[in-house]
Image (cartoon, rainbow over all chains, first blue to last red; front, side, top):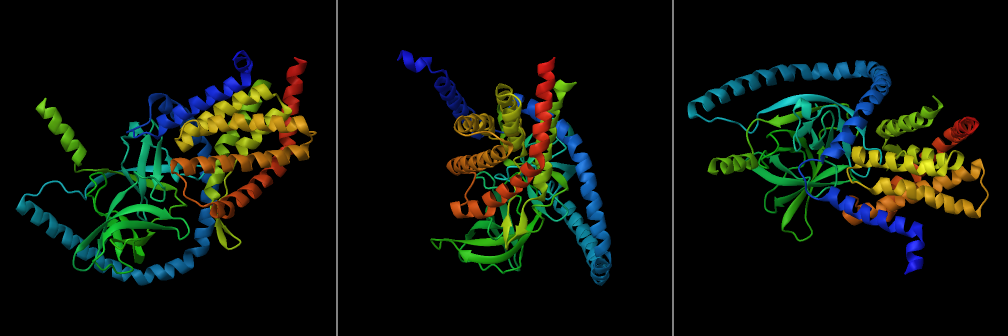
Length: 293
Length: 172
């Protein structure tokens, strides 16, 4: 085999293919957060991205405000009609919140999976290759952001934190195709709650697919979908979207609902990262293990 | 000072990609089209054409690694593919004569090749689920047009800058 080893190019190619496979295997395995060298590179690149995104967002903001100005008259008309409804709704909400608090105190229920604390962040980049729907935000571990926190805009939930660096974090949008990207969802129906799992995104329709819904419950088109909080990670009650169509799956055992996302998943500027106040199953288990020791 | 010109241009282009990506997707010709900026590939290939091929391998490797870590999270793909594209284009130019128009065309072909390899790869590991027809209609054609526009604008300045830097360094 002397001629084989003399071919330098072939050796380089083979070694780099082996390296490539090893690296990809390393980065695709299940892991809580990225490794230290990756975080290091991410922080350096993220620092530059932070600077680079400032003038860009400034210019974009200028265009947006001109457009806003042109739309103001129409929006104003629409908003005025809704203002009266809003006042009524607000008094109802305050009343119900007080009522809820009082009842909770009476029954000694502590901790609510609806509670969360928020961190505001700005989007500094979007994945340019656009195969995976991820965005990068300007807050990281130093701001208390951890992997798997829920992320939402004013419109509704948009995704979860995939990994974090010191100063930046990557957010995976709901539209990303990923087998671990599952959100436990709840349909707000008249009589009872119906549960399902957000699994995947229909790119043709631009809508989320909520699967694993029992086949015998009727779901109305137009009903709202929120997070159920039962996955143990996200808080309850974040708006996901609205049902547009319901169909049974290929075997007829479960139903699939198409859900139009409430938040715009393409044009995102400012987001809120939510930390759930109530502890999840993982943390309870970890604490229990510590106690045993 | 002249030594920092090319890395600086590279870094600006690296960051500009993610900013241009915010324009995508657009509605054109009655359908949703993705515009994927591959300005970095244009820069790296022109670097290998007009500056120095060995240096461009190093640039390709470093920028590929940054791209993988910061954007995709799947290590190794672009880090491996950027140098590979430079190598393949060098093989092509053993057969045909080089001028700026041919360089632009070859760069465009390399971008198509990159998109195709990444598509096949993501199909394999389950990140992409487009069929070939959707890939061509929604992604490849619009991406090639978008990048062709960039090449039209940037090819001549790239050539001038890179030749100038090379000339200066040869003088020293």
